[in-house]
Amino acid sequence: MKSTCFNCSRRTLILALLSGTALFGFSPGARAELSFIFTNSTPAAMPRRPSIILIVADGLGYDDLSCYGQTKFQTPNLDRLAAGGIRFTSYYAGDAVSSPSRAALMLGKDSGHLKQRADVDVPLTADDITVAQVLKQSGYHTALIGEWDLGGDGTSGAPWNKGFDEFAGYFDSADAENYYADYIWRHDPTTGFHGREMLYPNTGEKKGQYLPDIFTTAAINFVKNNQPDQFNRYRPFFLLLNYKMPGVGKAAVPTDAPFSGESWPQPEKNQAAMIARLDGYIGQLLEQLQKLGMTNNTVIFFTSDTGPQTNGGVGPKFFRSAGPFRGIRGDLYDGGLRVPMIAHWPGKIPAGQVSDFPCAAWDFLPTATDIALIQSPTNIDGISILTTLFNQTQTNRHESFYWKLQSRDEAQAVRMGDWKVMRSKADAPLELYNLKTDPGETNNVAGKNPDVIKRFQGVLKNSR
Image (tube, rainbow, N blue to C red; front, side, top):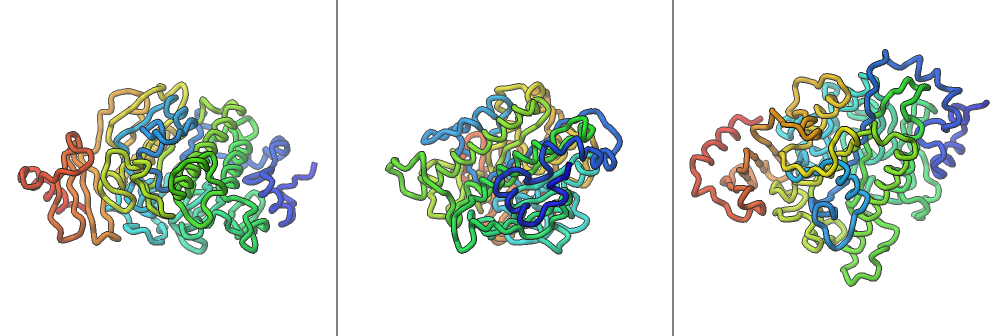
């Protein structure tokens, strides 16, 4: 039988991408014939390990999901994911803007140890080790779908240089904001394709293919084509699925349904429709995992890169997107940093958990390596929270959490226990808040707590 994935023409590749039949790998029917490809290159067998899926939304606020308190619309699939696992209420993004936040998630480091401290393109360097590289080295097959923000073609930070076997998406947020772009970047060693894949239904500013739809199809096909089985020696996979949602850009959403009849401002209708659409994508992926019998051996993490944003005229106060917290994307108050985090692994993570254990984006890498039964790099800031996921006593915890944001005049923030200090710019006085009694950070008590301020000054002086 001739393999269409190894001998297809460029036109066939395009048609396959648009029809969703072969994106990310060969067709399922060719698995047995081509299984030698995997067995010749797969490392020595290890205990069967779970596959890991990390889904990252863009600018999704703490209260933008109904399982976190949203009342004006519902997110039933993400609610189901949370009900079947654990939902964190004190999880922090890596930073208040996208690029350093994503770097923290990939490298296991807080923003004080990153080169990315503003929302500008700063590629990862050759010595930056990502979670994808660590997992790939141990035998995981890896893929990135969606926005990257950490290095483009020709840089050390390109996805294929940072541990991803396959890539379909965009290198930076500016390109990702066009939801009807006429091309997609692809790196696919299976077919040998590397470069821009044209999306002809979108040429001439037509709206024939909605990019998040394509990314969802790509994710589903990747899962189908890489399910651990005898043909690939039960090799697990790591899939990073970065949606530019609900970040609002050019022609952001095809329709404002099912909220067309609401008396809301149009930007808010679009925002709710975008989040509902994202929830639907999660439902499609969950359904596919269930069909394949992969539910119990796939760990799913869902989170957001930052707090809510105001692009496209959206007012975060309308849906109370930041919940009880102050600030939005770009702020180091909790509204810009505290975001949803859901983890789901049936049979391993007990269902129905709600945890207030403080953790952050840089904890994902060591948690993922614990799941994969391998060692983490040593020069990281993160800790594994696997025991918390399993509803067991977490014996180690962070003494402090640190953020620095160069794009906001060297703004800094530190959390220790229930206390948090803020400095809006390099020479600004410290603000102090007790998050237990004042989660909205409305009452600055710096003047009443000189001993606490002195302790934080020592931390800041020795930080980074």
